[in-house]
Image (tube, rainbow, N blue to C red; front, top):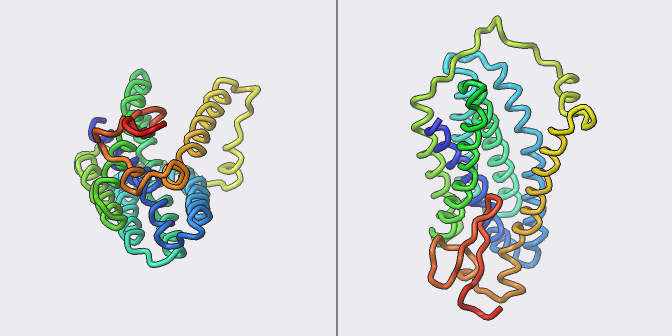
Length: 274
């Protein structure tokens, strides 16, 4: 489980390093006059891809009968695909390639995320799932910090994407080589019913109020994070007046204070005027 948490750090770095810094910088570099619209288009379609690919990858991994196991092929394939998509993103010559590459990142890393999430109930006794799930969830915050730091410390957009791709692969390797993922016998593979799959996403809130409250609060936290942070780089540059170096968050800087909250970094200038 420690190695799974380590792989999760690389996974979340692959998600949030680009989101926090690189996508905004790349949109500005490719189309300075329409950077806000480009960022909205790329991040919005990427989010749509993630909504579709994550549950599909989970359903398909439930039915995978490869010798390597049910989840491990999706974890390894997602990590490799995510790294490859980040490499393409690093060399994107226009907005169209940037859009396709980011959708590739979302599709492949969400496949990896589905596998990582499913491995906890697969391999952890029910009495310990809450504790182990919490430990693995901490990896999200660490991954956000690490991914943002790697993206900001490399000095260029291309180097940022390539460094995050390498970071993702390096952290995924230890678990991939030591996983105890068991193969699913072909005779035990459940059938796939598309209608049942689609309708399973509706869980009546009156019948399951605890789940409804948990889902709603998590949705609102993520919505608030997205609203506050997606355009933060542009706000710091265009409204506050920071330079690109000042607006991009380094890990430690004598003129900055870093605050970690809700799994994201918030950066404030401690030595500048309010």
